[in-house]
Image 1 (cartoon, rainbow, N blue to C red):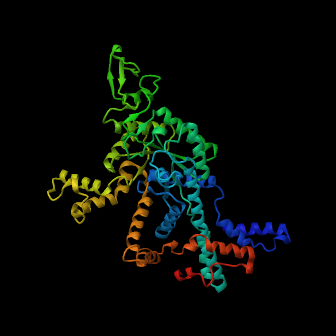
Image 2: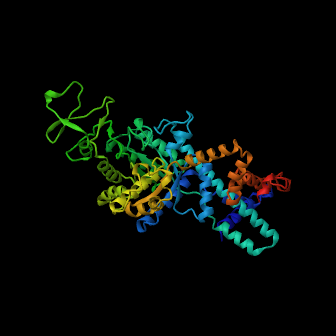
Image 3: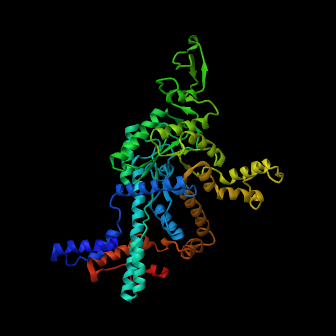
Length: 531
């Protein structure tokens, strides 16, 4: 017996026990509403999606073609439309996630207005967005199932048993739009206690995977900007443990922690690490500092010095009070950070890089995997990279290495449209197309994400619409550029009343009021023009 039929029977039993006051209650209608609200709490969602993500990680370990992907979201509607589109085009949501970008929360969701990615936005905004995303995804389930229920009623009314059986099968095997969200908790928004409290909010809202970075919370910068300041490993690992405790307290024993290192581009630290014994974690962190050997007599007022291998050294300190690392140590520090994070309890790694280069990423991950063989990476396919220029330069360099003639190309100007139809551009585009598959195989990247895609697509589409609508095209700018494409591509929100829940509201009116229901979806509803 299907789940919905079991619910019909159980609700019918409750109705019978309640007696005549419940005479107007239809068990099948109530069972349909229950099916449309499969997940009752955020913790149910967190557990369900953690199970999915863990299974996907295991599948990836066995087969590197089974990497996962996500796109960044800044509004529930955006996340909903992605999953509706994914189901429409691919028939399944398998290995397709959502990413919650702290950058987009700061830029688009703060009460202060647009902010840089420096953890200045309200802490609670992140958890609120997780909840909003899942509210919209749950509504997508309800909307899709509502359409199937109405089709089922039509088939029954027409006496079409074959169609009724087919639709019932679709209902019984319905795949939810609920998928894992990898959620950005920045550097924890404060100390370890603040990190723990914020993590609890995010998990309670439904997040099964939290991504935290090793920057100083009050000096946090976007990973693709300058001025990044990292913390000693002991400080960062306190926050990793805070996340684990938050998961365990809430009963999500298999929650996922993504440890991000910004060390590749971070040349500064605020602290000199505590050293308990030579060669320990703190000692290794300090070994990367840019220092000069001095004599005690050379110490100036306020100098900070320490013993390194029996010698007194003074780390170079900037006017800001920050200490700097030696130039060229970023990659080595990334490897060190990653190994230590896994040992501290992280499940997945995230390494911010200067460019999207498969070999560079693989070189770092191969060093990590010498010590942690199953270490897996989450990688930011960032819009901060100029993908066209980077990959055309990579293709150019490959041609040079192969001894091919590159005299027709100017390496510094390869972004130019004059090269768009060239052999080099085609080779570069092929590298971009296969980047995710190549790096999953070569660098053990389990999850590929684009942090800010809808920020850019919204800007691009708005620019095109404004140019046409306010120009000579007038209303044709909207009709030809938007609505006609929506209709022909089967975009669900062309019926925007349906997307906002109008048809579900009509269903409920009928459940509640029967033949007395005043419904919106009648013959005079202009949305019927899109049927």
